[in-house]
Length: 185
Image 1 (tube, rainbow, N blue to C red):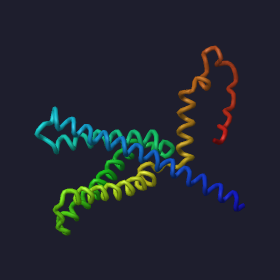
Image 2 (image 1 turned 120 degrees about the vertical axis):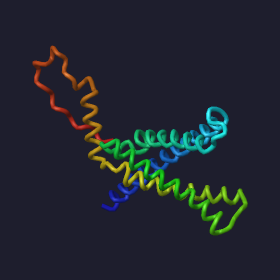
Image 3 (image 1 turned 180 degrees about the horizontal axis):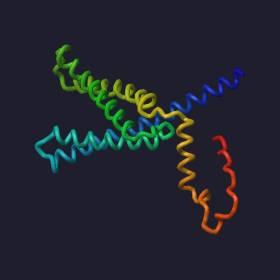
Image 4 (image 1 turned 45 degrees about the vertical axis):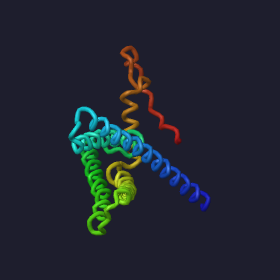
């Protein structure tokens, strides 16, 4: 009994750390997309409008992040209501931006810090805190479909897409074969 509990605990921790690694990878790519596109926009089509360039870069990075987290990091937790999930994702990102910006604001105004390097580091710490908040909010609120619901949705998709489960016109007279449950992975 204790061994099965330890085994269960290890598999739970392993799944958690896989999600953390995937989330970190998506976040790193989104960071590059955000800052890369902002830089490109600032030096081309949005020259003279750095705020618009930042907004455009961040918007594209946020959409990338939602798609990557939905289809890779939390693919086994996707909600069936895509619009609701996307709205929750945008709300959590807004809260994350508020947190990261808040760290810089607190350092600048109530604490009176004027050194740009220190203010930058305050923002980096804020991004770290916001990232932790985002991860848990995504995991437990945005992408919160239970595994059994996700498996049922995945099986339904397999049945509609898998040619082995579609009857050919000449085979329509044959009795249908019962579906076997998938082997545990």
